Length: 223
Image (tube, rainbow, N blue to C red; front, side):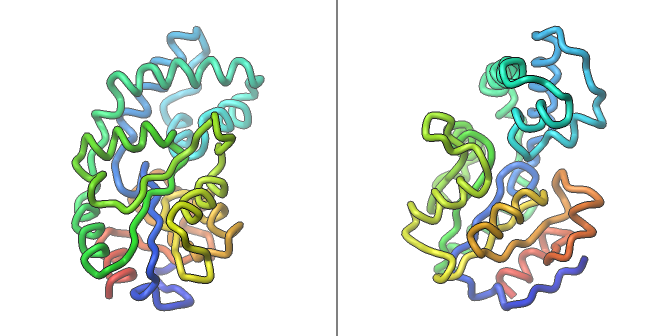
C-alpha cells in the first residue's frame, strides 16, 4: 500500500476523521479500562497483545467475535469498561503530533472537518473537549445506543446527514482500521488508512490509499 489515491483529495470539501488511533493516541486509557473490566467481572484476561485488536471496533462486537461471549456478558463487560473509562481513561488520550495543526489547516482552507468514531458520541466529545480540540471541529459524531447507531457506517450516515452533505458533494473518511474504510464504502466515500494507530498487516495490505505518517496525510489532504 502506498500514499497514492485515485483522486486529488486536496480539494475534497468534507474530511471525516476517526478518533482513536487517528486523531488521538487513546490506547493507554482504553487498555486500562479493559483491564479493569476483565478484573471487575472476573473474566479470564485474554492477554495484552490480543487486547490491542479491541481498539477501534465496537467493544461488544469484539467481545463476542473474538472471545465468544454471549450478548448479556459482553454488555456487562462493556459497562464495566465504560465506568472506568469515563472516570479516568479518557484523560489519558493525547493528540498525535501534527493532527491539531492539520485540523486547523483544513478548517483555514474552508474545508469541513468532522469526527466519525465508534466511540460513544458523548464520550468522544469529552475526550476532545479535554484536549481543547472540540471547538476546532464542525461536528463530533459517534455511536449512540439509544438511537440504534452502533456501527461505523451508521455513524458516517448520521454525520453526513447532520452536516447536510452527501457522497456526491465530496467527502473522504480517514481512519486507522479496515472497518473505517468499510463504513465509508457503504456510502460511496473514498477512504484513507493511516499507519500510526492500531492497524496492522491487514490495513497495510489493503488496496487503499495509505498515509504512514501525519506529514504524509497532510500532503495527501492539503498538498
